[in-house]
Amino acid sequence: MTSRRSSIGTLLLVGAILLTAVVYGWLVPTHALDDDHGGALLYLTIGWVPYTLVFYLVGRRFSAPSKLPNMRAADAGLGLFLISLLLSLGLDAWGFEPELVPQAHVLQAMGIFVGLALFGWGIGRRSKAVSAYE
Image: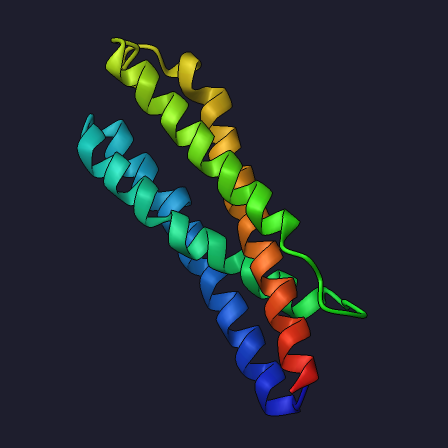
């Protein structure tokens, strides 16, 4: 990787980490503590993009695939994300809303974030390997 591409990648990684920290360290708690659960949910879901981007950039920057890696990590991450999201929505539909019973949604929330991390990492590794062959 050239030094210019490396510095741009580092800048993107730092920016994505800062954006993720702002969303989850300031925006979500501010709205949640002000009893604006709709705003907190909005920023929580918007924060999924920079969170996934962080793991994509980490996978692209710090992995060293010797050959073209398979997509199992990304597939497992996407599957875990979708299953966790559907389980959480199912609990919500059955009356276990996150505002009333937040403990019922903790496992699904962890599954969502682990799934997004695996998805970003898997895609990052794959794109690094593809760009190495070019």
